Picture 1: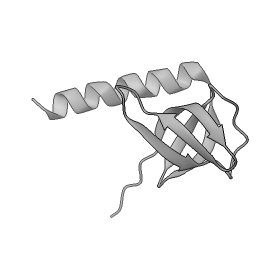
Picture 2 (picture 1 turned 90 degrees about the horizontal axis):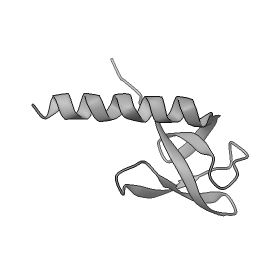
Picture 3 (picture 1 turned 30 degrees about the horizontal axis):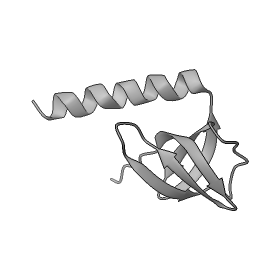
Length: 76
């Protein structure tokens, strides 16, 4: 069985079909945004280097908080 994960990130810069996103805590990556129409400051759901969906800020922040808790408990 395979498990696919998508993580919320905030768009911090846009250039054509590429955007630099912030996953939080200083984790920055460049992703392809050709599947969505984001604006600077939007939150997107990122899977395999692609932004696959726009997210409301509240939903994105709740999901990031859950991920933070999961990762913290995994380190115990």
